[in-house]
Amino acid sequence: MQSTATFLALDVGERRIGVALADAGVRFAQPLTTLETSTDILAQIQKLIDEHRVATVVVGLPRGLDGQETAQTRAVKTFVENLKQHTEVPIVWQDEALTSVKAEAELTSRDKHGVYNKSDVDALAATYILEDFIAEHSRGDT
Image 1 (tube, rainbow, N blue to C red):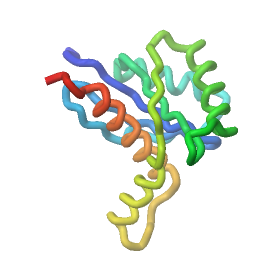
Image 2 (spheres, one colour; image 1 turned 135 degrees about the vertical axis):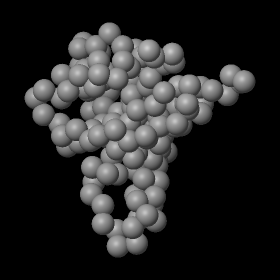
Image 3 (cartoon, rainbow, N blue to C red; image 1 turned 90 degrees about the vertical axis):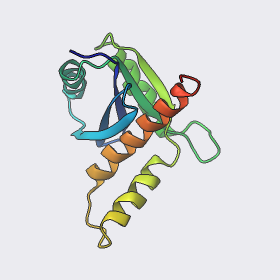
């Protein structure tokens, strides 16, 4: 039986969506998978929500270096509006500034030959998005 909330994070890109999962009680996120965008992507996400009994979906909000809205920001906002039509689980935003850069650095440090693929970066970036969300929302919870 599940005693605490489960969070699912999405790092939405043009071709792929990195996915991470965390139990709020543990406050530790881990990469789950990377989904290829397709016509049934919303159903795939709902399946993950159902399988893992997700209480909240956390979506990384991309912005430009100066915090401005970009074409990718608008694309992700449109994606989230569509997702809201397919799920009843609350969806919240989390700034995703530099999460992909951090993920690439982490993967490079693990393998000096740089042998990793973009889907690894996407799933790890989703993990960082989720860890940032948990950290921001757990302050003062002690």
